Image 1 (tube, rainbow, N blue to C red):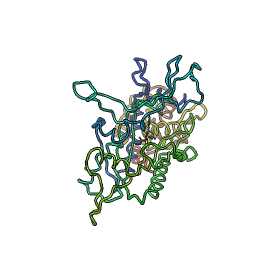
Image 2 (image 1 turned 120 degrees about the horizontal axis):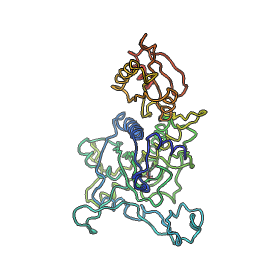
Image 3 (image 1 turned 90 degrees about the vertical axis):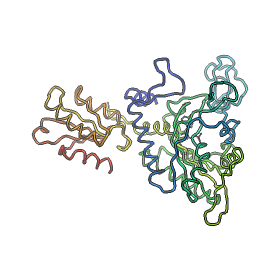
Image 4 (image 1 turned 90 degrees about the horizontal axis):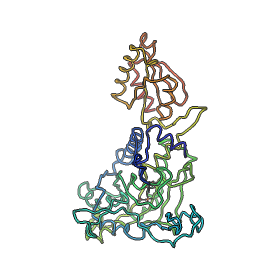
Length: 426
Ligand code: GAP
């Protein structure tokens, strides 16, 4: 765990938020390579869940919405509250369900009785800060999908089953944020609400569980680090008739990365009731009305990124290598002149670099010795390093070194971009 957190900081993936002010618990900033990795994760999800299908529509809603939405969804009630216990001696606060003993894990002091603590993040909208101005930062992206259900019906006239997908920030005032970016107070979700005929609930649930697991394997996560966990009935969320998590074996143990829930017609029913708007679906042939059921696969971007970093981290002798699949790697190619003090090599390397950069994320590095440059790229997971040497000046070929095998091959510099693209897509 410490090695991954340290690499993430050292190499510009993840920084603690507000660090020069001592940090701010539960918030993180993503540096240059963190942004790239997150974007790769989101783009791949969007590709598989939206672009490659005809039955799923995209959405990008506002983060702050009418507060009645959160009443209707049950999020202002006990369903979205965590059990809070406070140490009566040191006043540290803990989640009751995470304590293994009935005393404070820090000072062994006596603990208060359990209280329910609602984790929606509150704010005020408008110039007067009273109870009537209270609004919430969304606790999940899902509710915005349900309240736009009617808009999608009226503009795209889909047939059942169909889905609406959204990627965006969610906020929760977690009592105990921690385990690096696993549990934060501000995070990103990739959520799909898939509307179905009620009678196909079980079959669709099985389909989506498998679809999601396959997605994680395509990202390169090792099968032995993934498993399904079925929630026992007494632990289901307030909206769920059944939930299976896909858990990942993090350095601290198995934990949820993807929740797949059978939300039934809970949300459409609640929003119909609270808004007064009939949210039923009308069959185009028969005119018959029904409230669709919903299967919800809900995945956290930050947790998935943590899983990818953990899975890819590997040490070979003194080398640390991030064996991300090339499609996820923040940088696809690094270009080096063999030595930095030979103007003619640097110039040629710059030309080749500009060319690659037109089509692939690439970096140029001309500092220090070449071995150190390779190690630095290995640590951020760059799959190919391209070196321009004296032979390049004679025959216009370059050396391409593969991150995982450390094998080198000569490639014609005019064919280099095509070569790299081919490797990337293979
Ligand atoms: N709409 C359903 C929903 O939000 P959830 O299980 O509470 O369900 C779904 O959250 C996913 O969002 C989780 O599997 C996890 O990946 C991510 N997630 C939830 N809370 C998080 C937090 N505090 N920090 C980081 N990711 C979180």
